[in-house]
Image: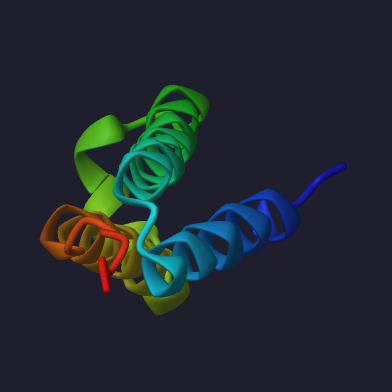
Length: 88
């Protein structure tokens, strides 16, 4: 598998579902896994390239959008209210 689009999309989708269902712990864990996978990809690209200082200028807009989306999902996971049963 040459692309990380499927794992990133799967983790992001599961995290968004966890946020909607208000399962805060799972949403935080999935969000941090998503962010970690994105940072691991950035690190592998930095080591693969000959001049690491040009990493920011050589990456395309899509990589930065995915990183920004991962950060927003983690923020959303931390801001998710805990699910509480309503007592009647």
